[in-house]
Amino acid sequence: MALQYVPAPFGRGGSGQRTAELMRALAANDFQRSGIGRQETMGLSDMQRKFSDMRRRIPGSFNQRGMLDSGQRNRAWRRNFADEMRDVNRLKLGFDSQRNQLNLGDFAAEGAYATGGLQSVMGDAAARAAKAAQIRGAAI
Image (cartoon, rainbow, N blue to C red):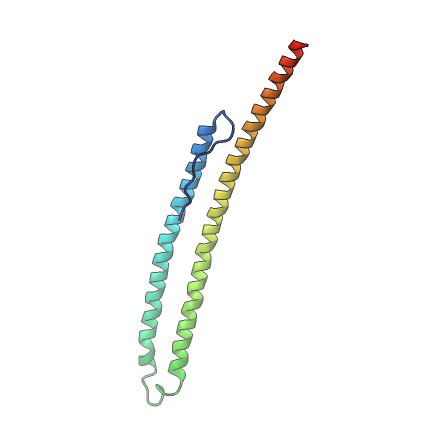
């Protein structure tokens, strides 16, 4: 879920453009997050089907005399579920890593926005200080 940002530009000059750049960067990252979510959903669904199909074959492979009650079938079931959990967690780690990269991109865009605002404020303050110095110099 993307956060909604309220434009609150710092300083004066170019603040609308800077806000637009921030919104554009955040929207691009949000679009990529949506794509990652769709890929994750499809990947998890495919994996669930694969392991479900594998579990359906387990009883048939142990359908020999004495094999069903030997404990090997139950071990095969447990191993199948353990493998599925391990693979699901690996898949999720990959998608979480991609999301974390996008979060870093958000952080960088917000940092650039804030830095630009600070530079604008500092420039405005310097201009006002110079103007105040001119006024004081003329009054003396």
